[in-house]
Amino acid sequence: MKYVLFVAGILILTLGISLTIQSELGTSPFDALLVGLSHHVGLLQTNFAPIPIDRLTLILHEITQTPLFVSRTFIYLVFLILAFLLSGPIGLGTLITVCCAGVLLQFIMGHTKRIIDHILTDMDTSSHTTSEKEHSV
Image 1 (tube, rainbow, N blue to C red):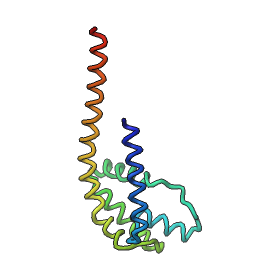
Image 2: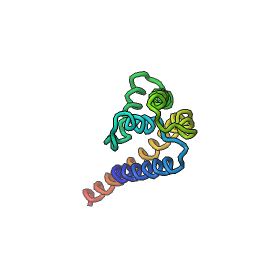
Image 3: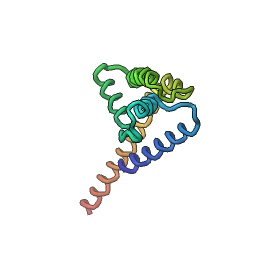
Image 4: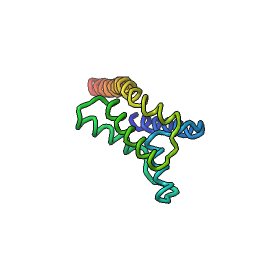
């Protein structure tokens, strides 16, 4: 079940990135930085998944003992400055992402964790109940 949720999350993430690019309102600061780097370094493909930003957010969160939204907002501010310096595609959407993504991440992560824990706990409990019934017969 974990893998199904992971794949569904990746598909939703990909759809969101595609819609953001098509809106032409600007990309996330991380994506803007990568595009800016590709313009200056001459790369057509960066071969970086967006996953490192999530890992960096969690590491910074653990090291600084600050809420997730502070860690993500700080990282996005640094990326925004670098993207600006490298002429990345910064727009209204980029600025909204810097201001709101961390708060939204904090909110969603809390709720998602509770839901996933509940699903996995129910699955674990039902598998134990099934195996207990088989052994008791």
